[in-house]
Image (cartoon, rainbow, N blue to C red; front, side, top):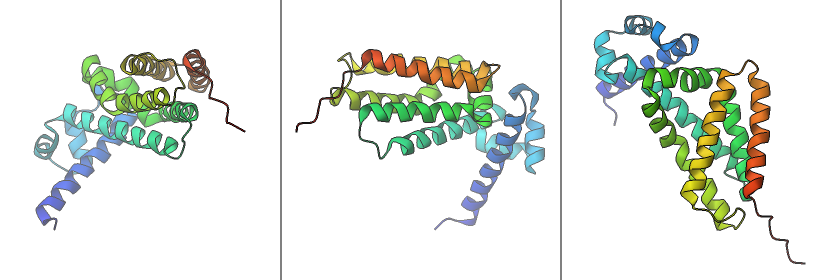
Length: 202
């Protein structure tokens, strides 16, 4: 059974995460001091450093929560779909929808590379989304629905494309228009690799 100490620790951690999510969504990373984070959470700097080793560690934890939720949403959107092309289309649509949400766009796409640095940002993003892209590519290859290039190369090509498109949406004056254009572009790119589904026998 969970002890009172463990329950208190988890509640403290959750309070810090929830507070940070709100503040980092509203403001830039650099404009949110650690002192304000703990004061707003009703906690101490000691709690922040004990659970997250400081403001950057807390930001990274919020970032990973958002990435984890995004991956879960995409997997849920394609879980009941068997056709590889439809799986890819739905996955892209769900991912682009996630990119339109303010918290994900601001924290993951806009502030993430600034706070974490490009290398760490890419490492964390790929940890959560890279495997999902590879799974979709492997399913399409196994079904003979895309041209037989190496799976890792295809996955990296589409991961890179989706990464750049997500950043373009985050930076766009009209995110809605950028999201529509991104979806159309990805479908055209997939068409370039696609092999028509075999006709069903009669």
